[in-house]
Image (cartoon, rainbow, N blue to C red):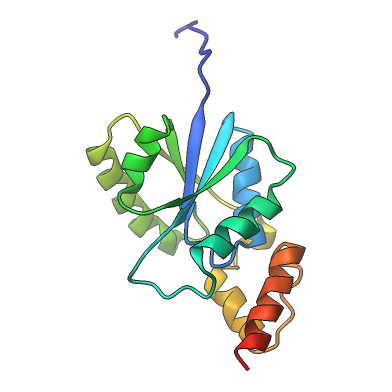
Length: 169
């Protein structure tokens, strides 16, 4: 057993589309802060997807959610996530697992990331049971159809959803 004391920062990257950020995402970030000295939320730019919110809106909503957390940074990211993580000197990529069905895909992704950047590990966190059933897609579908999602997203995100869907009608 090593008695070496680490003095460097342990940085983690938490990637996602965050369209929009949910309380499940918030829970994962808060829990990751218990394990890492800094969490960088990496908002993915994926040309294959058609998000409801622009990347700038998604970055802004996450920054607003964590405005009182000095150890959370938010960046938009395109390209290989492991390259971004390596550039940020991150030790780990944090991924949330809601169900067993998430594991197979996440496991494959973790193996590929490990192959591409051996010094960046993958860490899997499960959200608290209260948030295990929600996803951004489910939130958007409910909000689009007039459902009350106010307890499943941060307050300002709920307001943005209401505004977005009232614009579209």
